Length: 384
Image 1 (cartoon, rainbow, N blue to C red):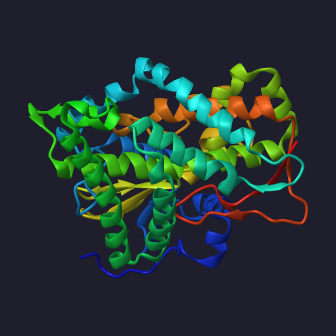
Image 2 (cartoon, one colour):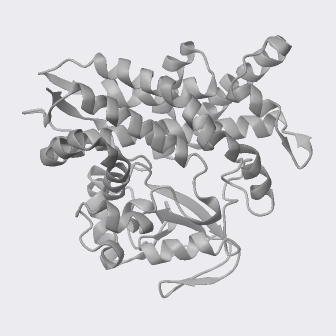
Image 3 (spheres, rainbow, N blue to C red):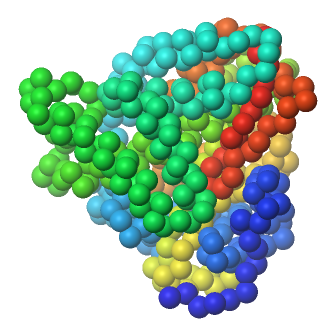
């Protein structure tokens, strides 16, 4: 058990939760390797996060007490499972899925009410994330609302650190996955030829994945996708509302969208952090961290480090691309990055085709999401 020690900061303090990004900027300058009871060790600087990403012998991904495929695995297990899932994100399957993704985005944007305030979170970001994930996995539309409700419950339980509630929501989600697996088994040869069915046929180390492994994989895949895609859409819409000249530039040159999207999401992180655990004593940023300590890699700070990016608010996509940790780095770089990039690019292309201007809603204030989520809980914008 970790010994009691004075806290360097409180990640759940009201002023930090109210607006995470500037609070993390201040911590990066004042206490870049910080201890708290809630997060244990938090790394704020780009170089310290990179140390953890590159030294996977010292910084293990096996943080959870529960099976976590492949996010919570180390070598060699991690390699075997990554090898099984990476083909699903190769260029050919991405190209096949792109038209369906585009149709979802086009139809959703077409429902926007022009000229009046719209809550982007309810109207665009959450519905898009849900519909696109279900479409990619081959899941029925009837899961849209249950999954939407589940996301809210999961975030509430995680923020409160309510272990009983977290266990309940995890079991609820696992129940959805088990039902999907069982329905495909009962269908036999008539099961839909979709990503879920094909994963059930994959082999790792010469053996089919167990239901426990499949449930863990699909849970991690889906939870990460729902949270980050939703947060990303809200961040992108907010940024363009507050930078109208960039919106005009991107409408005129949509081929610049991929770099612009990555850069906007560097400036304002959709995924706040990931975790590691130390396997041995290690020095990070001048502080000695014992073995067995949990580490929080704070993407929302590392991607704004002045030592790497200069002014963190400066929009410089070409200059910053090589250092951008939006999808991580090293052997644990996000395997679904090609899917996320394609989905966000397609959505923004369809949005910019159908609107000319985005404005903040007068007399309505947005509400930022709270750790561990980025983006917004409420984002009133006017589309014209």
